[in-house]
Length: 55
Image (cartoon, rainbow, N blue to C red; front, side):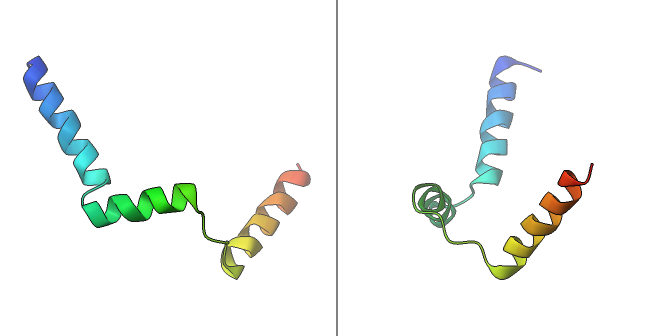
């Protein structure tokens, strides 16, 4: 595989992860101004911490 093909593949992979301008805006907004976790996520963290603490 040539360097150009590898570069194109890398760009394609990146574009699959952050596909659209809207996706980019959502992603970067969450990084700079994160939402509060919902109840399900908070409960999952509590369960996880309980399991880890018992090890």
